[in-house]
Image (cartoon, rainbow, N blue to C red):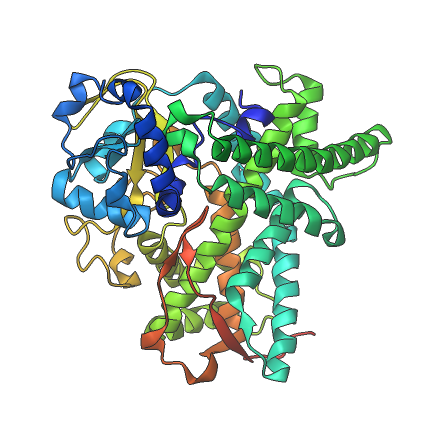
Length: 496
């Protein structure tokens, strides 16, 4: 089972690939120090013969292929390299560590059937069945509706004053509040400290980890300092979590809480009942809690932001989505979740946005436990495997005009993001599919429906939609580089 310590400080962290954009700032130091350790270079070249069969670009001594990844965001550069060297699977050596990049739906389909560890299986079972399953998502519907309604009232006040709103930032805090209430059940005034701590941990975990690519340099001050920073932040967050969990325990002991059960309550109930097939420790509870925040907050907010930006660039799509929402909810003051299933065109818009802009373009990498064959290539054990779902979603072999935002492409198609169609896997697929898919899509669809129903939108300062900056920005989730600032214009009478 994943522990609290393993989640925050892990030599094989799922965030290791995120260091690439930061590499250039430290490459000189690494090269100099590594050259002083030239006697150890033989270990760097001791790759197994099986890797020679996997296509890939030529690499340099010591740094491998790192120099080829500094000119663009990782998922973009890996896509370009794959088109040249390995459309299905491609071998790279990043520093001392071998990686295999999967860039086609055919190769991704093969990976679904590979084995995975017992600890991962147990963690996933808790998340899918008890924490993020369909029943829990329905249970927390009132939380989503209340928070989105609050946001609408806030935007309405801005609209009355003719003020712009930073949609990107507001979506982050909306997603944060919904997640905080769902997981912790805390009042909003107590959330800010914890939310900012989670945001800081996400930023640090997305940072430069020399030790992930150069394990032989673990003694470097940059590496030990990085770990010290994580440990300090871990102690601070653990202190906050301890206080929150103690409050939950006290409330349970007093028989309080009633039907207002949050996800911490769910985990504590599982621990007390012993209903799981393993011992659920307090470290496990903390790990799951933090993972829900880190994985859920920014990804949902990023998906909403990209979808709004794409609609602002295409007035036809924006008007068509608005007309649908306003038709379905005509005469209603609030847009709740009761009729979201009728918004068929909005579903197409969300799908197309996720195809072009998956919040996690490189699915969290796995380390192969044993030799596995993918598309005729043998991937050795202890190899990092990365699936580039951003490249798969833009593959011209499966998509007509793959870079064009055109929601109607899904109108007469059975392709969905639920893991059965490997040419479209923003949430992954198979055993490793993201357990938070239902949770995320519920937040995204409800929020977009409200924004479209209650407001018309225009760009600030007469900005031309064609020139709206859609440059991607690096982070835990890949969002837009520039905040989306829009002016809301109230469409109907909304309580303020």
